[in-house]
Image 1 (cartoon, one colour):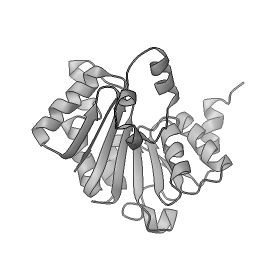
Image 2 (spheres, rainbow, N blue to C red):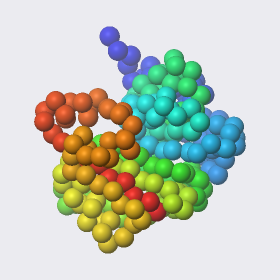
Image 3 (cartoon, rainbow, N blue to C red):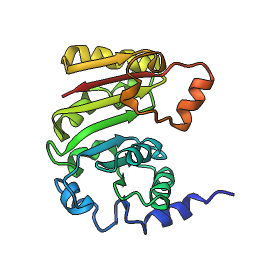
Image 4 (cartoon, rainbow, N blue to C red):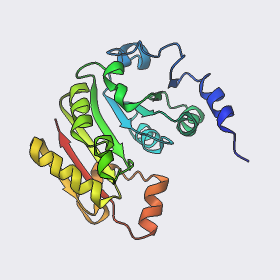
Length: 217
């Protein structure tokens, strides 16, 4: 039987690899993630809406010379990724529990090197367009915290969200836009490092192609 949400919240409250409201570092790390939290000068990669942290942890395993931070508001999900990182002694990965809208409160201008948006809720209804994680509102936030030349990645199963994102990007004219409607039948696979989330595996089993794009700010 799995742990209850209350048990998971209690567990992450004690963990050094989780920063959340009420924890020692929360709200104090803007511009200081490398120096004061990770205690190095390595690149900082942020996963937006990280869920269980599968991508965050997967990247941390592959790149010990980079810092990885998964952001999500749901502590019960973060518990999974933080548990894996703890069990595997991955000190280059951590999790931030906060709302995505709070990015500017938690990161300084140009502090982040890359941002990953992996399988976000596509928000198909017109009234939710502003809540899509690739809407101009959020892309503006990403641009502010990314260093010049920083990269944004999107992986999604949603053709609607993918098409919408490309439309938004056409107006913004980003640098070095790469995209594919079928990641695993393209030459862009190396950019995603062979990491699969649980949902991604399910989509592939159902015959749903994975869409991917990346661009520089």
